[in-house]
Length: 375
Ligand code: GYE
Image (tube, rainbow, N blue to C red; front, side, top):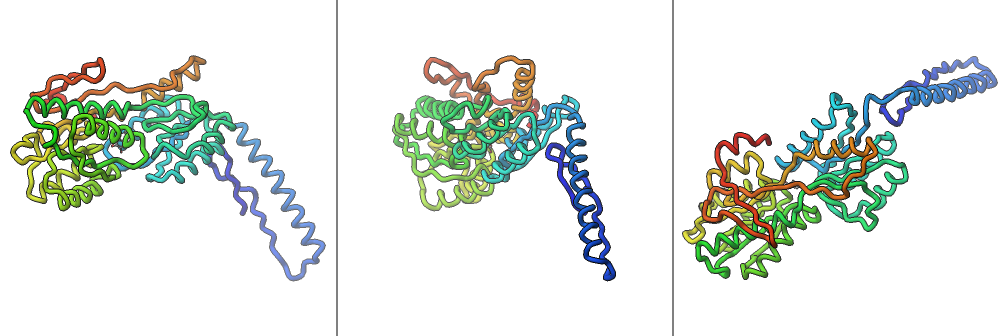
C-alpha cells in the first residue's frame, strides 16, 4: 500500500494496493507488464488525489499558529485565547503547533504550514533573531504572517504583515519607576538597594525589554544590580537561580523577576532559606517585583508577597482575529499594535508613577479584581 499525503488537509489517501503476487511460475515478461499496470494505476490515482484535493473547499479560513511553548501561566492563557478566537464556530480551521521552546521546531512548523497552503501563518517567536529565511519562504508562497506576543528582529519588515503584543521596555520602566518612587517615599537611599534579576528566556523580546529597563534604571538611580541570570520563564529554573543568588549574596533586598512563574520560584527559594518576602526591605524583607499579573501572580500581590505586579496581557486572540477580518475585508491594518496594561500592588504608598509625560496610576489589588481575572 502506498500512501500520499494531500498537502492542505493532511488526509492520507491510499494510492492502490499494488499487490502483485509473485509466483515462481510467472514469466519475467508478465512481471514487467504487471509492474507497468501497477505503475500506471498509481499515476492515475495520484492525479485523482490531486483532483480530490482541489475539489475540497476549506471549512473556513485556514490558520497555522506556531506557539513557542508552554512554559508559563501566561503562555497557557495566550494559547487558550488564540484557540478560542480561531475556532470552527468563528469560521476558522486552526493548525496549532507547540514549538517546545525551540526555534528549529517553530521553523519546521512554519514550513509545514506553507506546504499545507494555509491562508495565514501566526507566529509567537521564542526569540527575536533568525527568522529571515523561513519568513521569506512564507512570503514567496504568498502567505501573510502575523507576529504575536514577542517580536522578530528582521531587516525587511515586509516579511510580516503586522505584530501585536506588549511594550516590554515600557513594562520594565514602569516596574523600575515604581521602585524608584517607593524608595523615595520610604527614604531608602539608592545605594542601599541590592537587586538581582531573574531574566526570561535570553533573546526573547520580553526579556530584552524588561532587562534593558532595569539596567537603565539601576544606572540612573544608583542601585546596585548584583547579578542577572535567566530563569527561562519557569518556576523550577527560577527557584534554582534564586537559591544560588542567596548563597552568593547576603544583602539582596529586591528581586526583579521577569514573569510570575519566576516570582513563584524565587519566593519558594527565599522562604526555604528562612527569609521573608515583602515590601519592608528596611526590616529584612526581600521585595519581589514581577510581570504578567496572572491570577496566581495577583493572588501573591494581594497577600503582599509580590510587591508590584506589572501587567502583560496574554489575551491576544480576539485582537489577531479582528486583524485577519480586516485583511479579509481589504482594509489596511497597523504594522504594530500595542496592548494597554496596568500595574498592581497592595502597598498604598505609591499612588502614581510617571514616565516621560505620561502618568500611570497604581491599581491597588482587591479580591474583586482577583475574582474577575480569567487567567
Ligand atoms: O511574560 C512570560 C512568558 O513573551 C510576554 O513569555 C511573554 C512572556 C511572559 O513565558 O510569562
